[in-house]
Image (cartoon, rainbow, N blue to C red; front, side):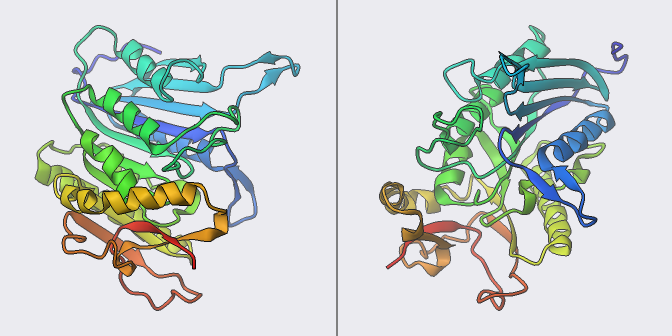
Length: 327
């Protein structure tokens, strides 16, 4: 791992890859694969191709034991600069008050006391992060409560307090809800997320290769749209189920979120105490509680209905997903 000789990095990219759950799938040839390991390989490839960036990759894995007795560390961190791997380190994920404290601390350790380039983009890959208190998100910590607010706190710490990240991509199912986008919005200028199921929970990373994007709102908006379109096109060609990817301009969606947050949060409290089949998800535009003026403000949604089932003729989606109680 030699020292890079290029100019100082212009920006930083952060990848957080959750692998402490079931991510097994089978490809078109029937081969067994681990989706989190696949995205790790793609993120590492992107890191080597970005010769003007600091790239930080955090892979959260299930805790294992040596000879069934001695626990192994359950995280692996990588730091690339100007396309070269500078450091890699195993770490414990149960350190710190906040769920993402270990990753934030390693980010600061890797960059040291030097002036850090701004965090340009952050990407989270994993299963849906619960909106209300729920245990079992991590296989290794079955009793630990994890919610979207833990991720929001980590995003805040990566951003550095007084600044916002330019783009945050939430590669999970059901990321486009008023509660989730509202929790993340204070820390990112643009958010790319899916309001529905997201096949394998992963966005395509190819648009990040040799990234050269300005930091003004127009440039970030254009890149967010390009990133979302690329993900949408790839998913639409690969799966027969619903495909939806939304781009949320956080400066423009705030009024809608504020208008519906009371009703949505009350529903969350109710849903948390119900049996799983007592509530379902719907397009927020299909519920009069949320179908209010301004629901479309600040949202660009790419949507294709499923190829089968009762929703196959749907042509539109608001870009927002809401809970609805089943009568």
